[in-house]
Amino acid sequence: AQSVTQPDIHITVSEGASLELRCNYSYGATPYLFWYVQSPGQGLQLLLKYFSGDTLVQGIKGFEAEFKRSQSSFNLRKPSVHWSDAAEYFCAVGPRGGYNKLIFGAGTRLAVHP
Amino acid sequence: DAGVTQSPTHLIKTRGQQVTLRCSPKSGHDTVSWYQQALGQGPQFIFQYYEEEERQRGNFPDRFSGHQFPNYSSELNVNALLLGDSALYLCASSLARLAGVGTGELFFGEGSRLTVL
Image: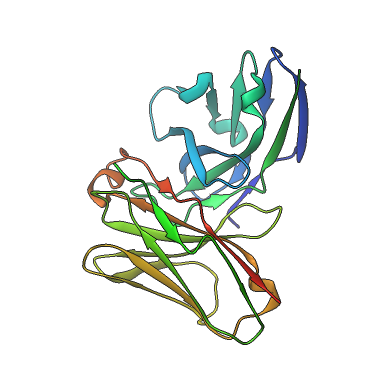
């Protein structure tokens, strides 16, 4: 079955600390991979995406993610977290060839302590 | 440049009623997808419209239906509402020719929050 697992429901970090959010997926073939962020009362904003090529992808707001095919993982990282990064983060996968039927994980809620 | 706009932002219905949610895609986009996001969950794909036809559908009953108009805007209709239909309904738009070659982006609106009592 196709699925996305985000093992951490809540994560709390101190401002300035590094961050890693985990994402594992189960899919028939190598999918398109995405990370989205959702602030309270807002829609989803794309942070970054992986389609092919370099497995380390850079996104907006200083985020990066690394695709590891052998581990079926696509973990999101940021070297230094800002208070404004507090939000909910969603990992998603979809079939190659379009933005069809994205499958989202349940999300990780990030809290940032000053 | 307006992004994806959805209306209404909030609405309350009772069980058994019907609801229509509306979405205007980002300027220049021709494909609209709808997602349901229950509280504390990730979004779930409902269906996608392109060229005024439903192209893909997720695991949702026939009570969920949609439409895409010639100007690319879209509606989501839900009949015979159940308590479990309470959720944030997200509309997302994209440009098919870019999505098909792995470029472009799926843009989301802020959603319509439906409460069923």
